[in-house]
Image 1 (cartoon, one colour):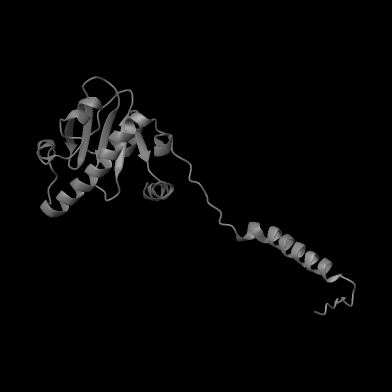
Image 2: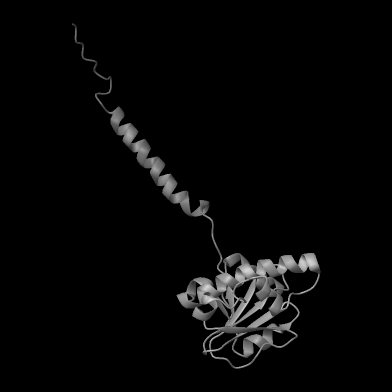
Length: 182
Protein backbone atom coordinates (compact mmCIF):
# COMPACT_ATOMS: atom_id res chain seq x y z
CA UNK A 1 0.00 0.00 0.00
CA UNK A 2 1.48 3.27 -1.13
CA UNK A 3 0.63 6.47 0.66
CA UNK A 4 1.37 9.65 -1.17
CA UNK A 5 1.00 13.13 0.33
CA UNK A 6 -0.38 15.82 -1.95
CA UNK A 7 0.82 19.31 -1.11
CA UNK A 8 -1.08 22.31 -2.44
CA UNK A 9 0.72 24.84 -4.54
CA UNK A 10 -0.18 27.80 -2.31
CA UNK A 11 0.51 25.95 0.94
CA UNK A 12 -3.13 25.66 2.25
CA UNK A 13 -4.33 29.19 1.52
CA UNK A 14 -7.41 27.95 -0.38
CA UNK A 15 -9.11 27.45 3.03
CA UNK A 16 -8.71 31.15 3.70
CA UNK A 17 -10.24 31.98 0.32
CA UNK A 18 -13.26 29.76 1.01
CA UNK A 19 -13.76 31.27 4.48
CA UNK A 20 -13.46 34.79 3.03
CA UNK A 21 -15.98 33.95 0.30
CA UNK A 22 -18.46 32.55 2.90
CA UNK A 23 -18.12 35.69 5.03
CA UNK A 24 -18.63 37.87 1.95
CA UNK A 25 -21.85 35.98 1.06
CA UNK A 26 -23.16 36.35 4.63
CA UNK A 27 -22.29 40.05 4.70
CA UNK A 28 -24.06 40.74 1.38
CA UNK A 29 -27.10 38.74 2.57
CA UNK A 30 -27.25 40.69 5.84
CA UNK A 31 -27.01 44.01 3.99
CA UNK A 32 -29.74 43.11 1.47
CA UNK A 33 -32.16 41.47 3.96
CA UNK A 34 -34.11 44.67 4.79
CA UNK A 35 -34.80 45.22 1.09
CA UNK A 36 -36.19 41.70 0.70
CA UNK A 37 -38.57 41.63 3.67
CA UNK A 38 -42.26 42.50 3.43
CA UNK A 39 -43.37 45.58 5.31
CA UNK A 40 -46.76 45.38 6.96
CA UNK A 41 -48.58 48.59 7.66
CA UNK A 42 -50.83 48.05 10.63
CA UNK A 43 -54.09 49.92 10.44
CA UNK A 44 -54.83 51.73 13.68
CA UNK A 45 -58.03 50.76 15.41
CA UNK A 46 -60.73 53.36 15.78
CA UNK A 47 -61.85 54.29 19.28
CA UNK A 48 -64.97 52.14 18.95
CA UNK A 49 -63.10 49.02 17.75
CA UNK A 50 -61.39 46.19 19.60
CA UNK A 51 -59.25 43.41 18.14
CA UNK A 52 -60.59 39.96 19.02
CA UNK A 53 -57.20 38.96 20.43
CA UNK A 54 -57.55 41.73 23.02
CA UNK A 55 -60.83 40.38 24.40
CA UNK A 56 -60.92 38.47 27.68
CA UNK A 57 -62.01 34.79 27.46
CA UNK A 58 -65.65 35.04 28.65
CA UNK A 59 -67.07 36.86 25.60
CA UNK A 60 -65.08 34.73 23.14
CA UNK A 61 -67.48 31.78 23.40
CA UNK A 62 -70.46 33.98 22.60
CA UNK A 63 -68.60 35.62 19.71
CA UNK A 64 -67.71 32.19 18.30
CA UNK A 65 -71.38 31.21 18.41
CA UNK A 66 -72.39 34.51 16.80
CA UNK A 67 -69.92 33.97 13.96
CA UNK A 68 -71.48 30.59 13.23
CA UNK A 69 -74.99 32.02 13.59
CA UNK A 70 -74.06 34.73 11.10
CA UNK A 71 -73.24 32.09 8.48
CA UNK A 72 -76.53 30.26 9.14
CA UNK A 73 -78.57 33.46 9.02
CA UNK A 74 -76.91 34.54 5.77
CA UNK A 75 -77.61 31.12 4.23
CA UNK A 76 -81.28 31.24 5.24
CA UNK A 77 -81.54 34.79 3.91
CA UNK A 78 -80.10 33.79 0.54
CA UNK A 79 -82.53 30.87 0.27
CA UNK A 80 -85.67 32.48 1.72
CA UNK A 81 -84.98 36.15 0.85
CA UNK A 82 -86.28 37.06 4.31
CA UNK A 83 -84.59 37.54 7.67
CA UNK A 84 -85.29 34.93 10.31
CA UNK A 85 -87.02 35.96 13.51
CA UNK A 86 -85.54 35.10 16.88
CA UNK A 87 -88.25 32.46 17.34
CA UNK A 88 -87.28 30.83 14.04
CA UNK A 89 -83.61 30.86 15.04
CA UNK A 90 -84.49 29.19 18.32
CA UNK A 91 -86.67 26.58 16.60
CA UNK A 92 -83.84 25.81 14.15
CA UNK A 93 -81.45 25.25 17.09
CA UNK A 94 -79.04 28.00 16.09
CA UNK A 95 -76.83 28.98 19.01
CA UNK A 96 -76.77 31.38 20.90
CA UNK A 97 -80.51 31.85 20.32
CA UNK A 98 -81.41 28.42 21.77
CA UNK A 99 -82.22 28.37 25.47
CA UNK A 100 -79.99 25.51 26.59
CA UNK A 101 -77.19 25.04 29.14
CA UNK A 102 -74.79 27.15 27.09
CA UNK A 103 -77.41 29.91 27.02
CA UNK A 104 -77.74 29.74 30.81
CA UNK A 105 -73.97 29.70 31.30
CA UNK A 106 -73.45 32.76 29.09
CA UNK A 107 -75.93 34.97 30.93
CA UNK A 108 -79.39 34.00 29.64
CA UNK A 109 -79.50 36.53 26.84
CA UNK A 110 -82.89 37.54 25.49
CA UNK A 111 -82.55 38.20 21.78
CA UNK A 112 -84.56 40.59 19.66
CA UNK A 113 -84.61 41.49 15.99
CA UNK A 114 -84.09 45.27 16.14
CA UNK A 115 -83.98 45.72 12.36
CA UNK A 116 -83.85 43.51 9.30
CA UNK A 117 -80.81 41.27 9.80
CA UNK A 118 -79.73 42.89 13.08
CA UNK A 119 -80.04 40.90 16.29
CA UNK A 120 -79.43 42.34 19.76
CA UNK A 121 -79.14 40.59 23.10
CA UNK A 122 -80.07 41.71 26.56
CA UNK A 123 -78.54 39.65 29.38
CA UNK A 124 -80.93 38.66 32.15
CA UNK A 125 -78.24 38.77 34.84
CA UNK A 126 -76.44 41.91 33.68
CA UNK A 127 -73.24 41.88 31.73
CA UNK A 128 -72.21 42.31 28.13
CA UNK A 129 -74.81 42.98 25.45
CA UNK A 130 -74.17 41.72 21.93
CA UNK A 131 -75.30 42.91 18.53
CA UNK A 132 -75.03 40.82 15.38
CA UNK A 133 -75.31 42.57 12.02
CA UNK A 134 -76.01 39.92 9.38
CA UNK A 135 -76.76 42.35 6.56
CA UNK A 136 -73.29 42.17 5.06
CA UNK A 137 -71.38 39.08 3.97
CA UNK A 138 -68.66 39.89 6.50
CA UNK A 139 -69.51 39.08 10.09
CA UNK A 140 -70.11 42.26 12.10
CA UNK A 141 -70.38 41.87 15.88
CA UNK A 142 -70.67 44.66 18.40
CA UNK A 143 -70.65 44.48 22.18
CA UNK A 144 -71.53 46.84 24.98
CA UNK A 145 -70.12 46.24 28.44
CA UNK A 146 -72.09 48.93 30.26
CA UNK A 147 -75.54 49.07 28.68
CA UNK A 148 -76.38 52.63 27.72
CA UNK A 149 -78.54 52.57 24.62
CA UNK A 150 -80.12 50.02 22.35
CA UNK A 151 -79.25 49.81 18.71
CA UNK A 152 -81.44 51.82 16.39
CA UNK A 153 -83.36 50.27 13.54
CA UNK A 154 -81.33 52.28 11.01
CA UNK A 155 -78.06 50.75 12.28
CA UNK A 156 -76.00 53.91 12.14
CA UNK A 157 -72.35 53.09 12.89
CA UNK A 158 -71.68 56.54 14.31
CA UNK A 159 -74.64 56.33 16.67
CA UNK A 160 -73.53 52.90 17.87
CA UNK A 161 -69.98 54.08 18.48
CA UNK A 162 -71.07 57.18 20.40
CA UNK A 163 -73.51 55.21 22.55
CA UNK A 164 -70.81 52.92 23.92
CA UNK A 165 -70.95 49.97 21.50
CA UNK A 166 -67.59 48.38 20.58
CA UNK A 167 -67.06 46.70 17.24
CA UNK A 168 -65.11 43.43 17.30
CA UNK A 169 -62.43 43.29 14.61
CA UNK A 170 -61.31 39.78 13.65
CA UNK A 171 -58.25 40.42 11.46
CA UNK A 172 -56.06 43.08 9.90
CA UNK A 173 -57.69 42.46 6.51
CA UNK A 174 -61.16 43.07 7.96
CA UNK A 175 -59.89 46.28 9.54
CA UNK A 176 -58.51 47.48 6.20
CA UNK A 177 -61.84 46.70 4.48
CA UNK A 178 -63.80 48.60 7.13
CA UNK A 179 -61.56 51.66 6.82
CA UNK A 180 -62.15 51.75 3.05
CA UNK A 181 -65.95 51.36 3.44
CA UNK A 182 -66.46 54.18 5.94
